View 1 (cartoon, helix red, strand yellow):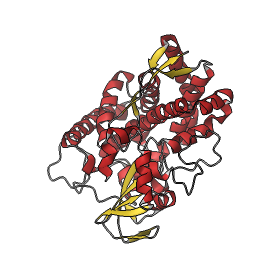
View 2 (view 1 turned 45 degrees about the horizontal axis):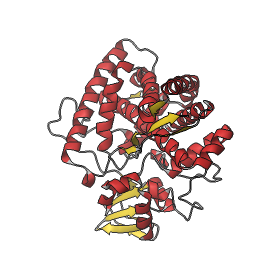
View 3 (view 1 turned 180 degrees about the vertical axis):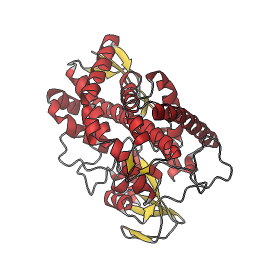
Length: 395
């Protein structure tokens, strides 16, 4: 059933398919010990329930030199793929370096970059939103935060794209996609290992230097944890925001009356960003394994069962949102799961929101109407929903 997500029609607009899924029940067993969750409250319950988590990391008897493993030979994952207590320890350490105060201090730089990119687009007249604004802004911001050279941006984007495609559920991924993701991960690891050596010798006051030296009661990140965390921050630090910007602008273009409202009153932008996240989430699904017997909604889920949580469907649950398929920048309740919930709530949510708000502000403040000059082109993946290309022209 979920292979329908791979069709061109569903990739362009997955929401009719989600409605069909929801009609079968907010939680239903699609196959033996394989559950699909599409209801908002049910999805929220799975994300917050410690009975649902991730399987133990794979043990590699002969790991590649650029495949970090711990003392037991287990593949080192980012905290996104860990359960407590490993998740608690690792996220606590990273949070000490990646602070809300640090994000607040970035606001002037994000504003400067957004205005520069929009000004360049204005000069071009016709431009690709994704290439000229949505992709470069978050990459520049996270690269500067981490202290990695902007000259390496194209390499990061290539590696991130390869790894992002492998985030889809395993039964939806081709072998060559997995191979490309493994290769990209190893290149990332090699890159950050070299950078870690430099930062240990000469700290430069950036986020990566802070991660190298961060400690909590003497506990520190191991080398493997350090490079995997840096890789996560770089990939997650721009993929979600890039998709938020692209999906959000497309939503405005497809709803001219909402576009006009926002242009006339830019104080609505923060609420509009939450509606964009709800309406067309940059992250469409996530998976969990039942670590013990549990109940979701009215269904019993046995230990070891797999669950696919359709965030995009949950965000349009008609029991939670009036007119769920409508796009309304004045929506009074924009509850959504686009940034996760529970212990895995997105660490970079404040940064994503800041970047999204700032780009929309810069585009609308330009005072020039813009329209599409070609059909949007969607990235060919399921978990992360975003545009490859969105060509626009200023009037």
